[in-house]
Image 1: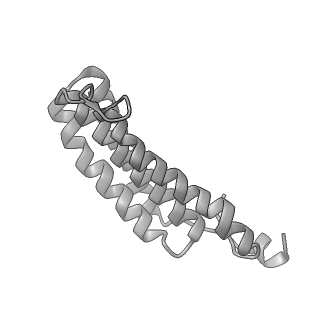
Image 2: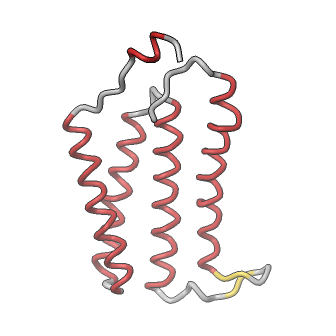
Length: 135
């Protein structure tokens, strides 16, 4: 690591950190509601959880490391929310071609999230070794 990289810091403004912490609260409420089969709460909690993850991704877009990870989180929440809704509405076990069920469609966004991280670690990061990243 060169001297510039050692001296550089990524500071998260307090209002952003508060939003990130609130995001965790919403996410946990969504997942607890899913676990407890509290359908209205679970579905309602998708909105703030997903909205805040999109805002966080947008605010960190100047750092490719942060952007890729935050996009992967947004896509994970999307996949997770679809899976939850499929269970709540009872179509999760409906078969689709390939011996899969409707809940397995969540694999599409989960895979997209993995591809974004694969792009970052396998392509972007090796080609930009001097670019600062957050850890």
